[in-house]
Structures are given as C-alpha cells and as structure tokens.
Length: 202
Image (cartoon, rainbow, N blue to C red; front, top):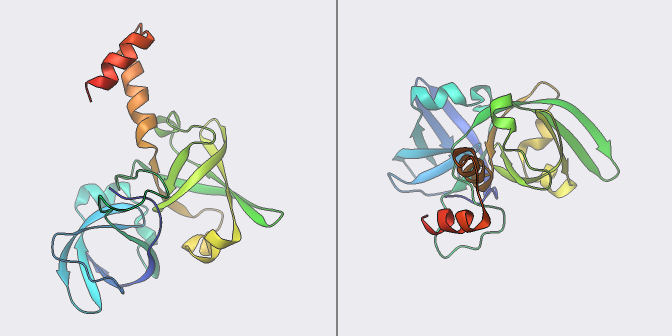
C-alpha cells in the first residue's frame, strides 16, 4: 500500500528489456515494493546509489512506458505506523490517461485528462485519483475526462512541470470507488441493511 505522496524525484539510469535501474537516495532491500510513477514494482537488485526493479510483460502493457526515462516519481511502501496524508493507493495502475488540455487558473494550473470509458465509471467529483503516483483530488468529471487543479507546490515537487498536451500518464482510480461499484453492480436490489451486511463481510 502507498499514500500517493511522492518521496523523491529520482533518475532513470537505464531501462533495458524488463529491468529498470533507478539512481536514488533511497536504500531499499531486496524484495521491497516501490511505486515508480504509481506502479508497484519489486526491488531485484540494490547498491549504495541505485536499485533495480523488474517489469513483467503485463506491467509494461498497462503503463505509460514512455515516461520511464529521465525523472520519475518514487514512493516506498507505506508502513503501518505511517500517517495517511494522501489516500490509500495500491500501486495497481488501472489504465493510461492522456492530458488533453492545460490551463492557467490564477495561481494554479488545471489539467484535463481523458481515460478509457471502462475506467471512467470510477471517477467521482471531489474524489481521489492517482496520476503517475501522485494523490490528487478530482474537481470535475465530464464523460471520460476529469479536471485537476494543481497548486504551484505540487508542480514544483513533482514531474507535472514537464507534462504537456498529449503526455500519457499512469492512472489508478480510487480503490473504494471500485469496491462500491462492484458491490452495487452485483446486488440488483439493495437496502442499507444489505450494505451493512456486505461491508461487515470484508
């Protein structure tokens, strides 16, 4: 589990075949889970200044793989004692979104991102979403496009500053929105007592 708060903007040293090597200040152990641009990956090699993870064909097929160069977002897995300051993030990328519009809005910047329709049903206005590993709040939703308002602090401390119209990004929709959708989809007729019963079973 992760929180969607970026701990470091690290540098990709190499990406050959399925092996991604990152130059980082982090010192993970073998087998640790690290979210890189929002994708939970497992550490397979480590040294004093870098670590490597391996991407399966399945992972590579669902990620905005072109962003795994230059700078990337890094977040180590959450400890049970950590504060959850973003939201609960699994590191399971649902789909790739595309930035379709960027607009200045006072002292902030609005990013409009389009995602596939099958994932858009999990978008909730004022709900949470993870974009390349960053926990953010959705402002508006229209069809399969949502709007984010990014403050200067976030722009400065993430790789959002390099995003342009046409940039592809990893998207993880809110875990609880997915669970609620599937619960109600399964139940054709449901009461609040049924909701209590279902939730008590988890």
